[in-house]
Each structure stands twice: as C-alpha cells, then as structure tokens.
Amino acid sequence: PVVWTFHIAPSAMLYQFHDLNATDIDLAFKFIIPAWVLDLYLGVAPGVTAAGDDHMFNVGLLGGVAFKLFSNLDMFVEARYKILIQGDSNIRVLHTSAGVLWHF
Image 1: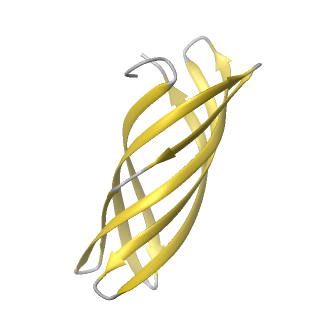
Image 2 (image 1 turned 120 degrees about the vertical axis):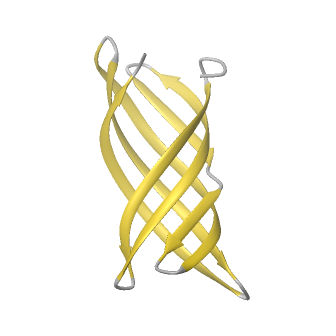
Image 3 (image 1 turned 30 degrees about the vertical axis):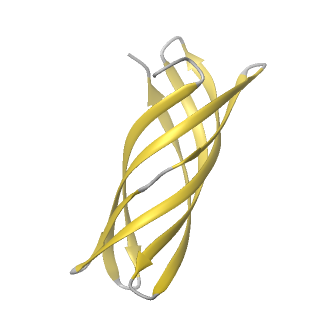
C-alpha cells in the first residue's frame, strides 16, 4: 500500500468472452474506507484485454468489501464494470468475484 487507505495493485482476470478466452491485465487504484470490521473500497482500473487475436485497452470502475479472517488473511467480494475500447465501438463488461487476500 502507498498509504493505509490507498492501494495500487496489479490484477489479472481470465474469463470467456463470446466463445473466446479473454485475459485482462489491470492496475487497480483502490481507495479504502474503513467501516467497523469491514473495509469498503472504490477505485479505477485501467488495463489491457486480450481476446483471441484482438488486443483492447480497458478502463473500469470497481467497488467491494473486505473483512479480516485472521491477522494477515482477508475475505473479499468485488464488482468491476469495464469498458473495452475497440475501434469505433465500446464493449461493456460486468465482473463479480470473491476470494481471499494475503497481506505481507
């Protein structure tokens, strides 16, 4: 983390997109809002998407919540809304994910 309430984090996501395997590589800028035992966060995530032979820039908004399981292990739920920029048209994608976060 840059400061406790602002994180810059790389992320990768693999998914199916119109019968193609797609990969997103993003750099997420997260602003964390501590709320009792939960950490709410909002952010932006610019990056690159590869789907088949196409490569597109993407920009997205993200929001989520995390809570502490153990001293250095958190559980999170997140939603990302992305716009894939492809020539004259834009493709909109919504992702939801959940998992664990390991803190160093």
